Amino acid sequence: MATSLQSTRLSMLFRRLRIFLIFCSCFYTLLGQKDKPNIKFDNISIKDGLSQSSPNCIFQDSHGFLWIGTEDGLNKYDGYTFQVFKPEQGNINSISNPRILSIYEDSNGILWVGTNGGGLNMYDPASGLFYNFLHNADDTASLAGNIVYCIRGMEQQKLWIGTENGLSVIDLKTRKFLTESLVPVIKLIQNVPLMAIAGETNSMVWIGTEKGLYRYEANTNNLLLLQHNPADPRSLPNNSVTALLIDKNRGLWVGTGNGLAKKEDGSEVFTVYNRLPENSV
Image 1 (cartoon, rainbow, N blue to C red):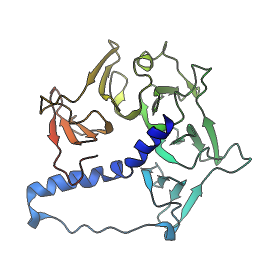
Image 2 (image 1 turned 135 degrees about the vertical axis):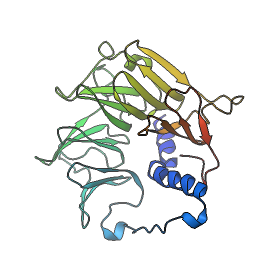
Image 3 (image 1 turned 120 degrees about the vertical axis):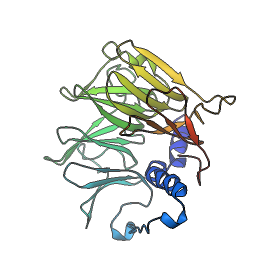
Image 4 (image 1 turned 60 degrees about the horizontal axis):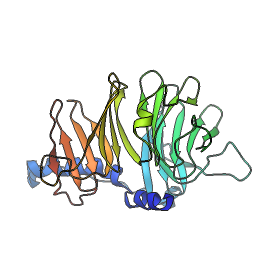
């Protein structure tokens, strides 16, 4: 199971990093070739200090530093040089796994790092120490799985964490995982890879999985699953949901294994963009 999930993740390398470019591609195609700006990129590679050439995620913290998660190390970039974090033998306060899948900074300036097989890491910039959280099959109040695909900050000092076995929720005040008795949605989404989370309040949350897109309403504890319907061109284009974004107009953008989809606020149907250069988003 883990090997299959890891292969799935590897096949999705750069997908999230390409979302911005895909949006630009769609937009400027509509404008026409003559209106395209001359966009230039600087290439940053291993020769510049990057630990490995396959970035899975990029995050900018509140101090302006770029954190780049790769298949071989977590990189902190100040615009000039890299500081690389990898597991250190015998050091329990080093990062647990070099394969980085997700990064998030909480309101206290603590960095949370999801890995591919090494669980969840908490990094305290003040001390320079990592603290590791792992799945324990004998403890229902532990991390749901050791492959952490996504991390999302929510209201009331909570982090929602997507793993290969479903959802975990950690209380930032106590730094302990909450059980399904306190967060009922945990029980509703189990044993399914949870790839993306969108929403800033606990009242309405969108959850992307390998089985489709879930809409969770905390007030009623209602969980609705939206899936691809071959007979309906306005349905989700694919059940593998790998990326989610809520825009300034409350529209929901959904990256899938077969193109990009958008659901307008208040609408129950999708506009599908699956004529992209590569349909896996």
